[in-house]
Amino acid sequence: MLETKLADKPRFSDRVGLLAGAGRFPFHFADAAREQGIEVVCVGVRDHVDPALRDHVDRYYEVGLGKLGGAIRCFKGEAITWAVMAGKIHKVMMFSPMPLLRMLPDWRTIRWWLARKGSDNKDDTLLLSIIREFQKDGIEFASALEVCPELLADVGTFTRRQPTESQARDIAFGWTLAREMGRLDVGQSVVVKNAAAIAIEAIEGTDRAIARAGQLCRAGGFTVVKVAKPLQDMRFDVPTVGVQTIVGMAKAGGSVLAIEAHRTILIDREETIQLANRHGIAIVSLTGEEAAKTDPMVA
Amino acid sequence: MLETKLADKPRFSDRVGLLAGAGRFPFHFADAAREQGIEVVCVGVRDHVDPALRDHVDRYYEVGLGKLGGAIRCFKGEAITWAVMAGKIHKVMMFSPMPLLRMLPDWRTIRWWLARKGSDNKDDTLLLSIIREFQKDGIEFASALEVCPELLADVGTFTRRQPTESQARDIAFGWTLAREMGRLDVGQSVVVKNAAAIAIEAIEGTDRAIARAGQLCRAGGFTVVKVAKPLQDMRFDVPTVGVQTIVGMAKAGGSVLAIEAHRTILIDREETIQLANRHGIAIVSLTGEEAAKTDPMVA
Image 1 (cartoon, rainbow over the protein chains, first blue to last red):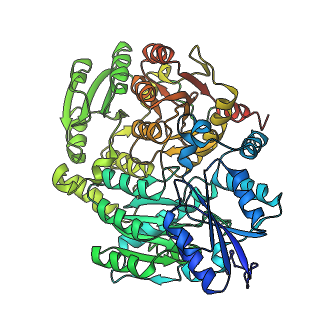
Image 2 (cartoon, rainbow over the protein chains, first blue to last red):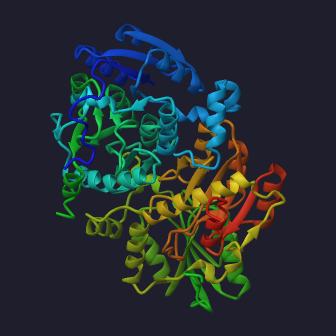
Image 3 (cartoon, each protein chain N blue to C red):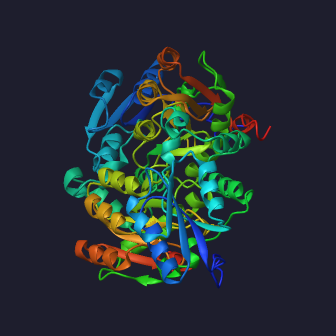
């Protein structure tokens, strides 16, 4: 049973707001939405969004990371009542020197920030709080995957190469760890080898955790496990892998990428699988139950 | 109540075997033991141990990391029945290319390695398995801290600087995370700021996790939390901090070091505290219960 079932029909049948971050996900969403006859009004987050997205949407605005009020105004001016988030936002910017000066937040952002003083800065807490701010102005968020559910990975081994028996054990070992990290809202990925944790992702993101594993495990042959949180909100922060993940793994010496079926976005599926095949990397997509079964010690 | 109470009297009153890794802990142990009239027979792990240790012990041998049989033979030849471990062993060597060729294991190590095939490579699993191998030859391990319990940090703020209110919250936030990492036997330290996880230590060790936090959190001001595992075996892998920890934090921009009282080794106490004072870093040593209380949201 899928805990994260999407609505049967998009709740936005004629127009949708797209709050877009980095990467290819906003492109896939925009193209799918317009193919379905849904008008796309995009607010791109500056320094994150690829400006080429402009040509894939009906109307395009760009705002800085600190412009919550600006983003809400754009959507309201376009009479948006339903919106989605797609693409990565780099939280690490919050920890740069003088974040307020760098982000030049608008008043709405400052008020929002002061009001949430005392709450933690885990991803879920932050993003839910942002969603509530849009709600105050009548803008609801849905999952972008409602219009492009085909981006979610189905079950199976996608590559020619299968994990070896020892790699299958590492998948099971890493899965338990990665799920715990998700429960704690620390990060989505862990890198393991021979049933030992090589790298645990926190704020640095999956790509940097993979690069680090390559430095720590010079012998290579490691397994990257990326899973959703136990209670994954499909409106934001859905685990995503793609060409970039495989490029990073090939460089660092990774052998297996294990992702969670139905709850992970596999971007540019064909290209990603081809690239993995070229580097002899296995991509395996499993449910949590199947991952536990890959452990010969348990089975 | 201390879960990790040490025995009232050392179980080695005349001579002890010292299996020594990197760092200053073996020196402190050897000096304390000899002051108490205990003869110290040392087996140093090559490429880890500081060779100057030779002058602090009664008899000194050195063996490579892959020489389990060699180490056991040294102790047996000296009629050692009780031994201790002190000092860090770098597990990352296990993941270098061709570890067997690099370590040139002796037959005992190869047999031990093959026999434990299928078990995981978490720290506890590995070290307990090594201890069992010594036991087969009549050598028992005790905690090195039985002869130098004064190395364990007592409760208190050791520095002039106290954590701010927001840092106290980060201690509580990080403590929960660090304890979970210990329960999973991933690592001992986490780095947090503003109630977000900046870096989680896995195989790279505390010093590299701190350096990474400095790169990810350029604004600095982060808190390092280092705790024991919920069921810490005081015979090995006791969390240790010292001058090196503070040097790394000063370079990376860390502000607070929070450690677990009675279960963390504070090496070179005076020097470490002086250095922290010089850099305006706070060192706080708490019990788990106190750490929870530092959270104003909870209190």
